[in-house]
Image (cartoon, rainbow, N blue to C red):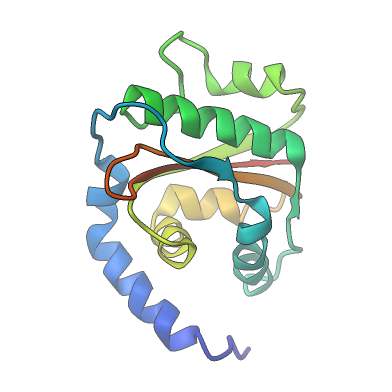
Length: 163
C-alpha cells in the first residue's frame, strides 16, 4: 500500500519520536493557568483515518461528547501541571466517561509537550499501549483536544476513543 508523499517524513518522525517518547510522555511541569485550549477532532481525523486504514480498520468519526471529555481532561492536566488519567478530585476515567454520557468501551491517550499533530500521532503509534488504543477495532468514534500551559507552546493532549 502506498502511503503517499509524507511516508518518508513520517518514518523519520516515528524514529525521532521513539527516542523522545519517554521524555514527552513522562514530562510534567507545574504551569500557571491554561493558555490556549481547544477541540482538535477535525484536525486529527485525517491522521486517525490513515493510521486505521493502513492497518485494515474502518476510520473513526469525530464525536462531540468524546471531544468534550478530552478537552476536560486536557484542561485539568494543564491546570494541575501533571499528566494523569484521573483528576485531583479522584474522578476516574470511567466516572468521567459516565459523566459525559459515554457508554461502553472507551480508552484515552494523553501526552505533553510542544508538538504538532504529526509528532503527536507518531509518538502514540510508537508506544505499545497508545497504539493498541488507536487500533482497537471496537472503537468507531473519537475526540481529540489540547490545553496549553501558557509556557513556550507546551500543550497537554487528550484523545478519547469510544464505540
